[in-house]
Amino acid sequence: MRLYQILSVYSKCDHFYLDTRVYNEICGKNSKDTTLEDIDAIFAANEKTFVNFSNELVFSFKSSYDMFRLYQLPARHAGSILKVKDIIKKVTGKKLCSLLLVGSYARNMASETSDYDFLAICDEKIKHIQNQDGKKIEVISYTTEEFKNALSEEDEFVLWGLKYGLLLYDNDYLRYFFPSRDNTFFKLKKRKKDLLERLVYRASLSISSQNISAMSVRIDDLKKQIMRSSVIALDCIPKSSPEIPEQFKKSINNGELADEIIRIETTKYIAEQQFEESFKTLRKFYFTWLRDRL
Image 1 (cartoon, helix red, strand yellow):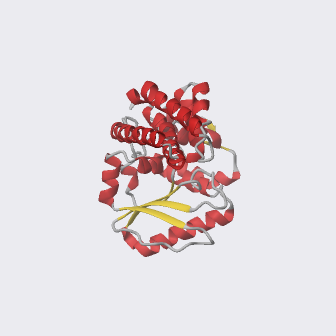
Image 2 (image 1 turned 45 degrees about the vertical axis):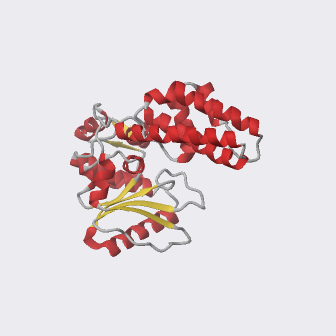
Image 3 (image 1 turned 90 degrees about the vertical axis):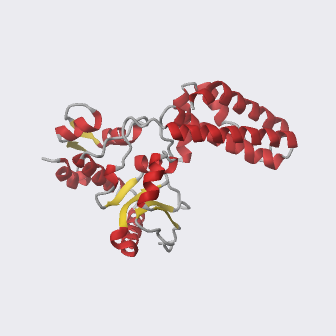
């Protein structure tokens, strides 16, 4: 039995049998009884690789599995997201190439205040979509040319969407553009290094100015980018913001140092001296561990 035939009974079982060719393509092992947790590990937990979705059968699995994950959300949210998908398809017609759910709902980490976020590839820009069921709708739209350029530049948002987003629609387009296993992240690392050089400089200026509000903003920016860039430095795609501290801690393989950085306070109500100490910690980490890895 082929994998896409098995997917129709996902909701009725905890285990299923993977087609040998598909399993070999996904993780290089023999076919076996596999749990949903195993599949999550294959598709998401390995942060250093992308699955080769140019294989039609594997891509079919990706599409079906993402829909299964969508239905793990509360019914009202899954229904609203599918309603937005239908609205986007209606307003774009045949010009829509692909649509992914991204953000906190794609990672099943949403709160009641979270928006519905989508990444769309379309032959024309998508105009504003009205809110649905009290939820703000954010559609980040790329033309096909913009998407190709963003992917070639290893744009962080696009890479994140392809790795962690849920594929809601594809008109035989996106599977030809999934990043390959040999993605080097070279351009993304270079951009992060340039950004961090600027952030370190701006943070040092804020310390010199003794402006608490400026220190709060600059140190917070520097801390967040250091954690994200540390993940990227090891050829991993950063997860969503709430997951970054744990991913950062695992990436640098130094729990004590990671905890010191994660615990840095950046509210404007702390003392100036504490900001100075925090800046020294972040700057030292950047120059001694991170900079040469970018």
